[in-house]
Image 1 (cartoon, rainbow, N blue to C red):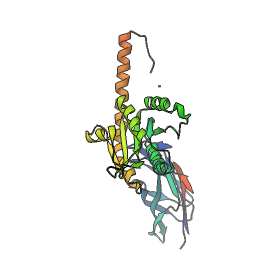
Image 2: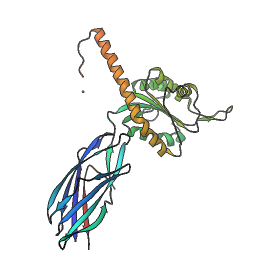
Image 3: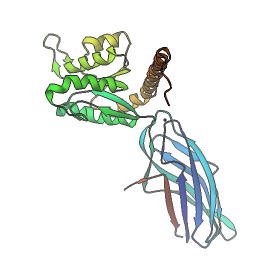
Length: 306
């Protein structure tokens, strides 16, 4: 009977999209015959990695270091991503190597992939049950891309008379604004669905102070007011989504979010340079510039009965 233990360790607890991860492996033979490990594969829900250099023999009751492998995560993949291991095992019996076949883990492991730095984004969206049934999962998708989300009435609660002032304050302090245009009422003249009135106002505030903008539009909605002009003139990206197929929206966000984050960073750099110019012009002194199982490390115990 062959038996073994495979141990692995990621070099970090979490990664950024596009980053390279280093994974180290140890192979322990807990049986009485020599074993040879080969064809190690790391299977994520988004990609499979063949770790060709991870292979080697372990004598009975001995442990060996198999080495390390590097993998690069895609730039458009974020969140808690699940994976499993596959590998081939050989046993030395009667002076020859016998292929025991392919083995795979029966547990789900995960690794965290999140962009840095974190940005604060104001999300303009509805607060009704119907709106939140769509807006809540979308907000979670946005948070996976390295954003702290703020919506008046959800993350920030204030008395009704303070809402207008607090909205302006939160939009001004945010790095960007994302509007989720869900249906609110049907236009009696045109027969089309319109979105929330305050969404137009909040988009207007952000546009007026040159904040990066992104509009996510329910496919049943026809935009009006300022958002429709921004869409027509292609001044703001507008992504249409099916409220009954949000997985499709998740894929669309994966395509646009890297660029959206870059626009925020570019805006920050412009503001930073403008601040330096003001300091230089003003002659000021100096400013100082600072079961699901986690998969970062794990153990695979294997057994083959003849």
